[in-house]
Image 1 (cartoon, rainbow, N blue to C red):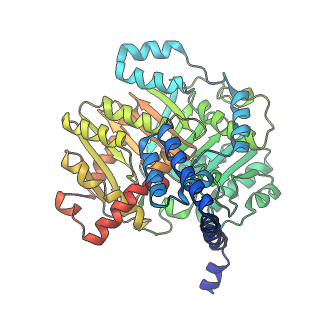
Image 2 (cartoon, helix red, strand yellow; image 1 turned 90 degrees about the vertical axis):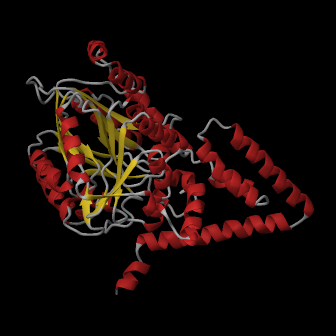
Length: 509
């Protein structure tokens, strides 16, 4: 029965379709190239032109090298394959819809200049980061209460209590929803709130939910319950660059004044009700106040790109349903990242924190698959005598990706970066903290997919109580980790060779 269930599962059928399609592509290109000498010459010239085009592109070299190697290895087919699969740009229709939505919301996220002036007097490093994010369209706020939760187990009950208080609207946007206990606990509240007249909207990523028990048309089931919903970028079993662009965000907004985000998706393993890879170490945070507005606009832009219904976002502002004054200390700056532009906002936030650190920078990431810019920043910081520590999983969720992560250890350790593996299980949190002053938490992994291909979100915290809370989480976590030494980086010839191949093609994975 288990075998039959696997064979008839959506992910198996789609995977089989992709394999068959790939074989068909290879056979088609091979037959084209073998028809005649002129066609062979044309294919080889095309490959040369494609390589020149790749070299000329304004793009990170790490994204160019794998394709150049592939084309050189397959000169007859490589150019054609790149033209079919290599651009990794969002589909035109997706770009058009999202650009239209961004145009409608332009000007809604306005920066209070007084906050920037105040920050400049406090810390020129911090104001530089905030100005960068403001340049990308995301203001920095005050008057926002923020709380950090070091485990999904701890944030989940708080989410349930806040959802029960909703009186006007609830927005949920998640990469993964699974039909299990965690989601059903939320769904029960959503149904009750709908009956009470609360508007509920849910976005989930179709590919993110492929491995789960969620039916292909789950959004229809939610609609029947009175919950508005759609699956982002529905997966079609064809090779398409658009399939690379996933909605990896985790956002909950309640009545415009309360938001949750962080690393957790809505499935039992994220709150340790289901054990998949040992203890699941994740995190989340809650915002109450002015800064929630940025998360509301992020959600509404995605919603109205694919289900246009809001001509005016003003009804969703934080103070509409919370007329009392907001409290909270510190500076809070939610931000998003999108594959629609050439700006790697998430990576630049990380690089700024590393480059600005004087004393220490601590990092949680489930995957460490980084480009030369990130490697250089980390090693330069260590050489400046900054205490650089990175925590990765002790029990991986994907063996090949774990080996790829480990392939970066030796070079970083050689230059003074400390690597820790979380021995109790899998670490899924994505956090940076530095110098007791600044931190960021959110959905952005230190890997190519998060940094270049996905829709992501995070929040930058400066001089906020959350910074100390995140640091305390790191100090507690280090006690449960194994410090990796140079001797741990040695690998046999087969594994080393496999890691070298993985490193070359990491940007394409």
